[in-house]
Length: 335
Image (cartoon, rainbow, N blue to C red; front, side, top):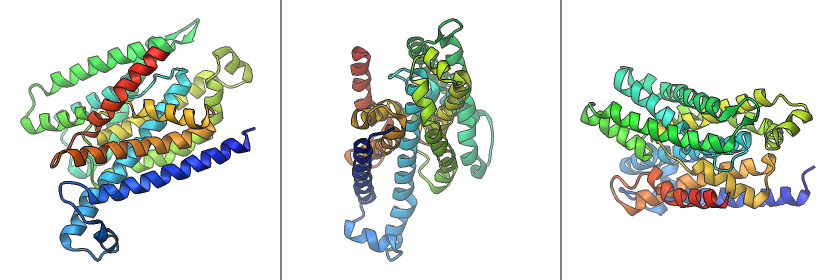
């Protein structure tokens, strides 16, 4: 039974986060290399803007804002799931190598397979999922001990090792590539949100639309998996089956997000921690809050990055890393 005061607190925090997201969206629509005055936003949204205003808003700003928001939500949800099933507060798809696995898969696909532009957009999340899944299975297999079960510490260490190895493999793959191909992969590695167009939103949205309700449905299973393994088995759930199902969901969420945003880490680490600090550790309460925090956080840093440096801006992945790396070290020392 969840206390009514906690439910009220969660609703208040969700309302505040929605307001923050709304404010950041409005700021993001007006700020950038080609500025759009705020008094022209509503007329332009209603179709009464000039050609330039409508082009800037509907072809450049809005797609990027939406894709950033959705990707942040997907990464934070993936991180929340991984922390729950591994019982490790340091688990994050970027830190433990899942994002790097997706990146290698995308690099191979981009360099060696010729696909038309229309299919490329929708195949990217699938290709990223395959690479991320292979990496996750490898990490899981080497972190699991038959007698003791999944080892949280081993998982982070093996994941970090895999992440570095796969990043090195990506550099080897692009060492003999053409300049334009190298430029694309370099942007991906930096976490530069390159998939800022409406088709990329359509490619990402179904993954989030399916896996978000699925995760909320499995929230109670995540609560039980957060207990010790003997207790979880004693409660009566199939620990391995639930863990594998949720691992697949976490991998799919992370892969679909980074396929269009590039290698962004730490969002899945920070958002669940912030949410737990606000509303407690119950998954039914903190997951919706974590999703909104993750979406707002990535949207906020991307908006700042575009505003600080004109033209190309600072990649969102770099901006998140500036915040996330010290936070990761703090958690590492604390835990």
